[in-house]
Length: 284
Ligand SMILES: O=C(O)C(=O)C[C@]1(C(=O)O)C=C[C@@H](O)C=C1
Image: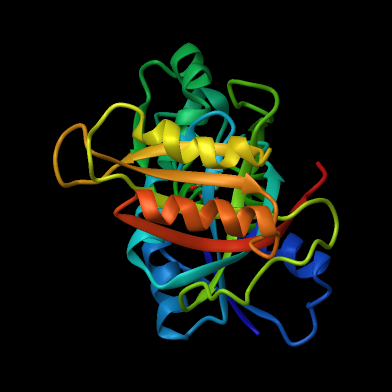
């Protein structure tokens, strides 16, 4: 099995992929292929170059990964699982703290450490990279460069951990989703493996009238279905026009969820079921 992830080696996406592979006991015959960005990872799944892809979708400090949400809407893929990974950012360099003039990382990681950067490196130049591990790879070249990345990246690229755990909030987790090629099909209902199943949908409410969102959420409330997430994302048609990304507890195989989705479909201009799947949480 080929697993496409954001690389290079040492990224949190790699950690998520390794975690998911070991939980699913699929390590035999599995190989990771590294991509430069989330877009390319999606493309590799859509083209069939990767059997599955693992991409970040949401962080507990910085919120959603916009590109992942957009690609979920645009692409014919299905979510088949999720894994929550603890994130422990470190300041890594070849040099010493006094040498640092440039700090590099993925925008999500820079956002998660913005207080730290402001307080300790107010005058440093900030550069964004395609991933945290890409920043670590680059930091290997000059002592005046530092990367914000994982301790695995420090090992991978021979860097010193100058400061560990620099994220602005002690608890920091990123949720990754596992995607496969093709639209979700009715018979792909989640069968609970550990905790509970989750189902993810996107709803487009074209008609701008009072209570439209309330009516959709009401279908879940009526049936005592718990929402674990709701997020609006610009539809890109015009300012103030949104799509709603909703995660609910339960499987599309459950009669009440099937029912709720049936009635929601009658009220919206587009309903896309992204998947019905199990999840894991990695320990620190
Ligand atoms: O850059 C990485 O290491 C990634 O796997 C990407 C990513 C993200 O996009 O959210 C993953 C986890 C962290 O939140 C920071 C960056």
